[in-house]
Picture (spheres, rainbow, N blue to C red):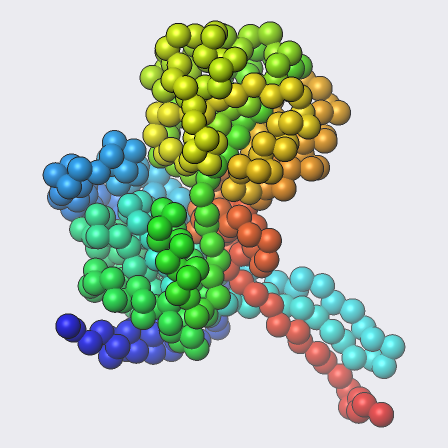
Length: 417
């Protein structure tokens, strides 16, 4: 068995050295690197798509689900969107050096909290090759060195995207080691990253439940977790039927493989157009796993079982049930949700205010599709993931979420009695 410890030590050492240079890098240089990288993504689009075709063929042969293949797939439009996202990050304000707050103590000491980079980030991800570009862009813009370890199913795509990002970094005169892609897909490297306390400052997993579970079980490095997207759309009794139908169909079916997709629709018992809503989902190609009440409304539904309420399908499948009102809807979300994204559809301002205040999720929405749970849609340029925990960062994690702070104290000779 290969001993990968020397390789891990070398990568981490290079990343640490690069992180010190990045922390002091000029804002314009970081922005310039990403502008160059975006252009390189466009210029090398043919190479990226050819590499992606290899991954797609291998994934099809391996029996990846349609949803997984959709996550893996790149086309000209998706490469263009990737480049645009990198450019959006380039024009965002640099968080490094931002003064969060400041004060002067009675003894004359001036106190300030200043944003600084975290240092070295380890990103472990699956399926989505665009994470290679997003993670590299956000890490560099926030002054962090990044070590990337993508999934085997996207290995050729990741390498092609990384080559374009690296070209931009080098052209701007920043250290090439600011972003490194693991040169091997051996799973042992994941374990070494998770145990690299002191060498890696934070691990960010992006992938399925098994990957996140492994990271949380084995990590000796702080973890910023992106957990399941068991998202709910609750159709309140006072929802406008046309709006509700449009939102729920979009929230489920726009892209079923994204973490912001609605996986459960809750329908108020007094909502007057439940049959039409269920029918619209089925007509759009969605399998509806329903409770007994909704099954009576449309014979094309499938009976839901207990596991359906706790499942992130990432496919053209949705669970659906009737609830007695707002309280039962929120109770269901508290019991079965993953604290990711949950929405209420209603024209009742009081019901909306109660839902937004009491549902404990990273993102809560009123009268909008859960598919907006995306850093780009939040004006963040891109995201490293949707954090569902309660510490450090929550919701779409972008530049600010990849920084910490230090206290800067200025005096004029004060001593403590």
